[in-house]
Image (tube, rainbow, N blue to C red; front, side):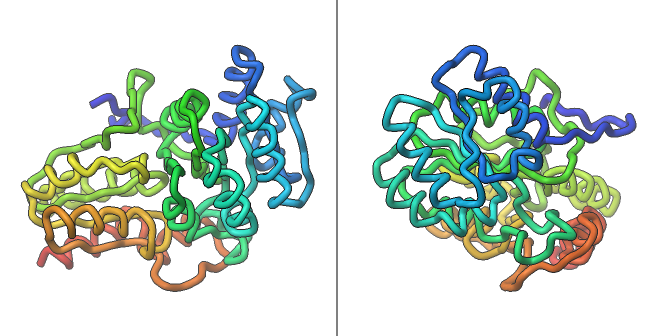
Amino acid sequence: MNLNRGNMEREYKSVRSVYGKTLVELGKTNKNIVVLDADLSCSTQTQLFAKEFPERFFNVGIAEQDLMTTAAGLACTGKIPFVSTFAMFATGRAWEQIRNTICYSNLNVKIAATHGGITVGEDGASHQALEDISLMRSIPNMTVIVPADANETKQAIEYAASHYGPVYIRIARTNLPDIFDTSYKFTHTEATVMQEGKDISIFTNGETLVETLDCVKILSERGISAEVINVPFVKPIDSETIIKSVKKTNRAITIENHSIIGGLGSAICEVLSENYPVKVTRIGTNDEFGQSGNAKELLAYYGLNSEKLAEKITGLLK
């Protein structure tokens, strides 16, 4: 496995900046790529594309429904629109336009939404999208990706540009350490077994992958052998890898920076209930809104940092 998981000091990178830089790289080789934003280009980092290709950048203002329908129109002319705003506004305010205008017509629109999950932090509940994965994966024709670090984010954007059809990519607000080295390659047909184990299967993605890997080190010291599977593609989901792992361990846990309702946990439950029913414990935010606070403190408060996860999983296995 191509991982950066040694004892070296971690380097944290802005995955939003990686998104912006990748758009610029793609824009240089593909003139059909256009970028749209809803007056948040500094936060989403689409400003990098706007500076390089001002004639191919469109700021529609604080009008997310217009953002999606304009992108749909551009897609009808053969363009490849990447649209960005905060995940709460992209999937909440513009859900009808995504469903009826983009997905119903299977248009080639890429929604790269930033600021998903509880780690939006001080902006509080109104800006913390805890339902976006649930909303997007329920729409036909939509592909849903949740990358975990800079390298995976770059590949997710490149994949979206080459794949025909609607794609939703959730990009973290927080800076994240490198988990994968540059030789890592992901594919929409496979989840990735990060670490093999025999006692329990843990499925995760996005920001909680690094917390899960750190958690597993603690579990190992307690004599618990956990298998960790990274699931960047929530839809389509790799049922084969999920079932194979759980047939070995006979117990599953899902960990996500999202509500336990409708997200990765629900997707894993759907796969297992139909193919290999076992006990599944979903760890994420419960049926509740978030609150304002420091991102690290919020991860701890909602039980999503490595220490709290280790406590939870140890208790479950007892």
